[in-house]
Structure formats: structure tokens, C-alpha cells
Amino acid sequence: MNKLLTHIPGFLKNKYFISFAAFCVVMLFLDKNDFLTQLNRRNELGKLQQSKSYYTKEINQLRTTSNNLTNNPQTIEKTAREKYLMKRDNEELFVISENSDNTKN
Image (cartoon, rainbow, N blue to C red; front, side, top):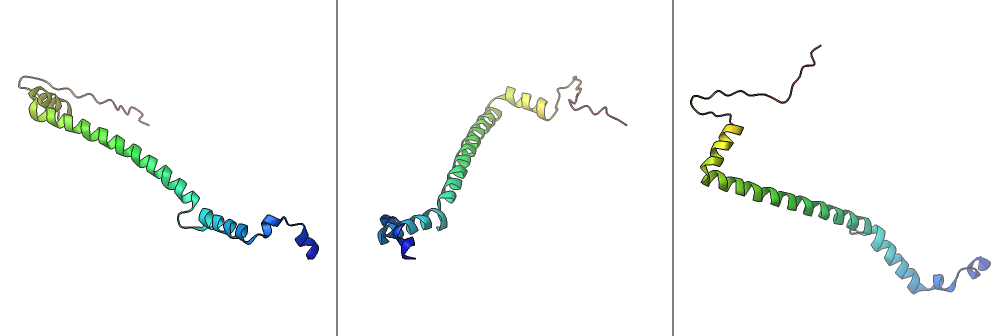
């Protein structure tokens, strides 16, 4: 036993080093806000910031579209024709779908 203790370096026997090492282990791995949790939260924050910028751009685009629909009669007509398939008098309307399911057995 005594022979085993002589091979241990002196700084490992120091009580301040032992307490500092224990503190580091607790803070890095065992604490509620440990290192891995902080990394995960930082990644999640980055994803949330990207989604925030995406939705901000979408909101601005929808605001301009809404503004155009309330103020510009040509935009109103274009939207009515494209989305709601409305037509003028004396016009024929043909709807061609892009999804063709010709795979009948």
C-alpha cells in the first residue's frame, strides 16, 4: 500500500487539485446545465433563428401581396383567374392538370 502511494505524483495528492477536479467533473457532466446540454441548446437556437428569418421573409412577402390585392385591380383579377378559376363573360376556361395518372392496371 505504501509502495503504491509513492508512485502517485504530488499534485494528485493535493486537496485543492482534487476538489478542483471534482468541481470540474460536476460542472461539465453532472450539472443541470452541463456541457452537452449547452451544445444542444446552441444548435437549437441556431435552428430557431433560421426559422425566424424564414418566417419573417414570408410575412413580408404576404404583406406585399395583401397590399397589392387591396390596391391594385389588375392583381385582383390575376389572382381571381389563377387561383379561383374565374372567367370573364364570353370566355371559355380549360383546366389542364399537371398530375397525370395514366398507370391503370
